Image 1: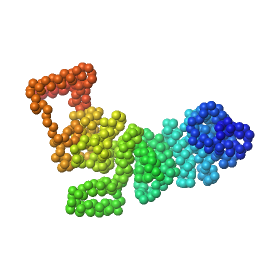
Image 2: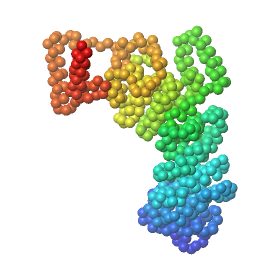
Image 3: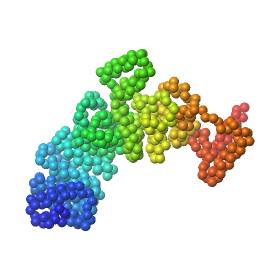
Image 4: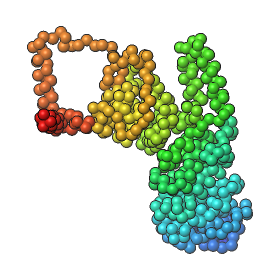
Length: 570
């Protein structure tokens, strides 16, 4: 049924007929998102008529039917212009139980009306700038927080909670003022964290540690949707939270990080939903102050420590009978237990797997990959155990160096390939991640990547001449394998892999031929330089690149100053 047919029935005024016609209209246009411009005026009148009916005392089924039709009509931005008024917004807020009362939600028959009203508000707020302004005037965010508190522990009304959280997400996305109000005035951080806890049904075993049931069922679709909406709303509320100024803020962020650790170890109903859940968790973790991210790892329980010791003892006995045969088994054992230095690294392992999946997708790196790479980089820079565990997984001791660092299927190979990606942001964060894993030491980075792949990072950091970055790391030394030590003299520093000695082409040339080839090369370079195809560059004393003439002048000035100082001292 079209809008004109619905309007004709409307003019008859029979409530039963109106409900029947609107139900038919909703069924016919359930999947419609683009409407015929010719019927625009009719749809506007239909919207106005629906609001007039909703003002009256009608049955619950009629309210739900009207709201379903209004939800479909509100997908059209142009239709909303005349009907988005303060009075109509208040009608929807009343039906959605958005008020400042403390009365609990007890009438189950009203729940479909509340859900449909919230869905309509989501569409209207998203599509109408006038509705966004009215939401500030009507203090909609505060009413949503009040409704969220009412349904905090009631699983039966998870749909209400889900669309309440979605509307909070939209408001905080579209209005910076509402983000500030949510964070400070409405105490949105603990409230939304509690909503996230409720979605996971978390049971705490310690202040910042939740019980993990690895054999438990996955989240239901409703629980997953609620968790995702809460994560998105929390992201907006915490978007400017890198600096923690109070102890209470630090505690709240640690609680949130502990909930996010539980989130990373939880599975959704499908693989796609699990990835969406973990993606939003990664985005939110990027807003958590780095000092609070140590909550992602936790000390092993006593029974886990005993089990690990028993397993390692068995491995040691095997090593005595065949060290070469069990070396790979021990490496796999360490990988599977996800334990490092007495700490449970399950959440970090999930982040690494998530990162690798995003790399393997091969597209949308800036949106999909850079958040997790940035998160792992900051975790590694600030927390030694995390860095050492990640390096053990990403940059294990080199044994086979016959292939270039960017060739292969390991995580290291994939990350090195990203160091020369066309997207500057992706290239920089991939290089920065590997650099931090190498404790910002140039010689260690070059060992794993080769000079050619690392040149961009080193040039940007002013480290082309070697050295290390600005951050301090522990002084423990990396140990090279015997295989690497034996191959090291023949490794090409530019490509980063083992090359067989090649015959020198000038060995069989006469002196005249060598001089001719040298002058030919000089003339070619001179021509390219004069035509500005290339620009000769040099490295300044501080390690940064500059035009060759400038660097030569700086070195000359430095040498002259040194000579003068030497003469003065004499």
